[in-house]
Amino acid sequence: MRAVVQRVGRTRLTVNGETVAEIPRGLTVYLGVGRGDGEAQAQKAAKKIAALRIFSDAAGKMNVSVGEAGGEILLVSQFTLYGDCSHGNRPSFTQAEEPAAAARLYERTAQILRGYGLIVKTGVFGADMHIEQNNEGPVTILLEFC
Image (cartoon, rainbow, N blue to C red; front, side):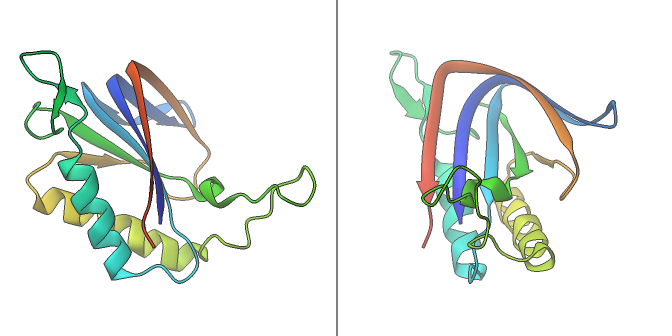
């Protein structure tokens, strides 16, 4: 599993011009599921995302998690995180998990995050989504869970 975590002031996700999910301050998390990923990767990803201390404390240091900051999470499925461009200019996605299995792990990761007491909203798996977000910082963290 791979994730791109961005600290945001606001994110809005639309499908076919209709707002599907919107969060105020929090994290936009783009999550890719790789071949062979399972429950262990979903558990690791959720635990790390929930605990990341990338919001500022009273002293201005990144020392506060999304939950402690009162933020929300928008979890977006992103198979293109497994795009391999090492052979030519057209990405290969052979390392991305098959859609049905990926959708289950994506939803499972959201469920685990909610179990940490977090507000988690999701996009529409497999849809052509349009995302507007206001990055804060900007702070962008790349994570991989093997």
